[in-house]
Image 1: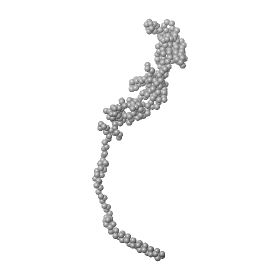
Image 2: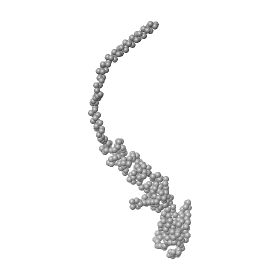
Image 3: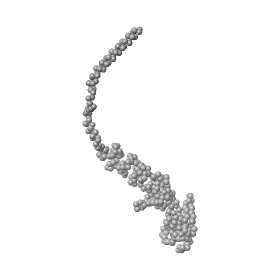
Image 4: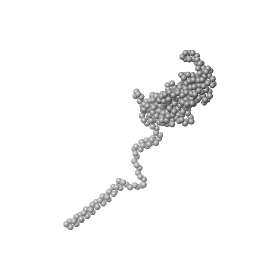
Amino acid sequence: MANLSESYDKVSLVVSIVIAAALGALIWMAKGNVEEDFPPHSSGREADAPENPKQKFYADTTSEIAGAVALGGPVTEKGRSIDLTVGTPLFLNPTGEEIDLGDASYPMVHDPIPNQWWLDNRIDPGWSNSPGLDQDGDGFSNGEEFAGNTDPNDPESFPALIAKLQCVELEKRAFRLSYSSDSTIGPVKPTDTFKFNHEEIVGGRSVRTGSENIPFGKGNDSNLFSKGGAQMRYELKNVEQREFENPNTGIVQKANFAEIEDVAGAKKGDILDIKKGSRNGVIIRDYTAVLALAAIGQQAVTLKVEERSSFSLPLDPNAAEKPFKFTGVSDAGAVIIEWEENGETKTMEVQPLSAAE
């Protein structure tokens, strides 16, 4: 066995020597072929790259892009250029006709607001109530902003606040004044005295207040009532005897007439002419309007304004300027407001939400 192992070792050594010799010969033979396929550079200059057949096309195209490029904008069906990146038209009328908002020849989506107004102010006119919506939250609708020529996107720009004035409630106080009696015998004399009555419904029942015997034309001494609902409000300025025609008989008669002046409150200066007789009194109605402003978040703010009194907008009882005046109540029960604008007196009637009883 030892001799056989030694024989294997010798054979392996011989085979290894033969293989190494064969590989060396192959490498020696291939050396010349490599030099032929890849000859060494004789100088430091690199070879030029082959020419690209599309080179001229690329050069011309690049030159055009480097210059000024003008892209044509979109146009409408009628050829009108528009600065939009969306398709037009955006609307259809009830008959299915397309509406180009930017072309004045098309009908208005929300008459009388021009279609261009919606584009200029960037407001969506696509809702049926778009004119009634409030884009900037100032209490005025888009339609009111258009009519007032104000900015619908600016909450500080809005039409005159008078347009948003509301009368939440109209309070009424009514009473009767009558010339009940006097001490006159014959013509009226400065020494004569006179009596008057004040009657008013209070708490569902009639309350009557009678005056003292008072002279006329004596200032505070001629004040009709020292107590009651008309306390210190009226003065007896004069009493005279006049002829009048009785409407029932047509006969000319004589009677005493009292001239009474309102000397307190908002109606100061008003003159009442009352004929003697308990059935010849006059009905006085005093109104107080509870006002509110349905704009700029002031819906919860109310202010009581007496008839003939002035107020400001926004409603502020302490405002230095009060350009608006509650002048009275119309036959239809509406509150009449008066103010000056551009040298012109303007009036507006506001129907109360809750009418006077």
